[in-house]
View 1: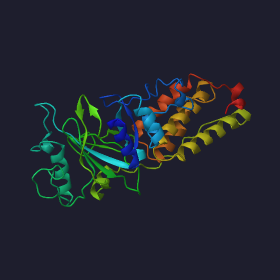
View 2: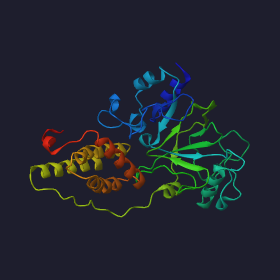
View 3: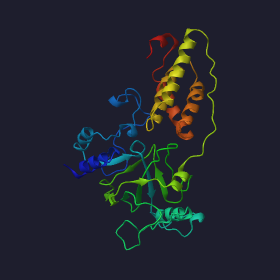
View 4: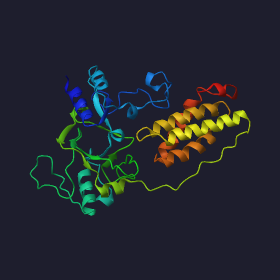
Length: 330
């Protein structure tokens, strides 16, 4: 058994959903196309585009088949795995310096430690790496990975209650300079992989700790005001009733989608209604008006919602459903 296969099975044994990355690379190996370019030729995309998050698995048989064929790197899909991973990066260039609000810090660890101290849970950034430093206090030790670039990944358990947490990026709406997070909709390169020849290695092999409350508070998005679906005017005859039923069916499927599958559900609903729009039964604006509020109500971020609906509409135009064949459509 190869080291990569053994590592992938070990991660899956923890309940973490893994998927193949291109060898020695951070990019997913599958699918080999984006949602915008999905033509349904991939067998797993016949019912709608299936991305890396939906393909991630804990099934040992699937993992053995994949990692026995090529030396794939290992990606961990954070959402399905119930993880929030804090990515503490380091500067890559001499001119990569912190913005004024973080003046004096050296890297992502410094920023994270500063945030923790501000919230009454000081940590020692050297703890857990075999260095001569006093034990950390205030924050439970958690599963930790040293990245190929010299950074650190801290793995935490996603809170059971509350909204699904999403990805954040540095000081662009995130926690701060050189601190990214990955949760629903995000993945990390797992220990055992290499990127550009540099290994990702376990630095502290313990179970992930619960996400600290202060950190969950910073990562929780502000609640959005309820936004009712816009009224779509349809004729009262048979075709209008059919289209209204199709809209209700797609909205119901979207709002019932489980965590980790919501973006995919939005995409497939946008494709289905986009086919009706391409056939003249609706407009693209109608589709957006009914799907956007439903998607926002289940916690999908506005930017992601807009992109996914637009992608679904583009795919839907490839297979229009006209009024004449509505009655035969699934």
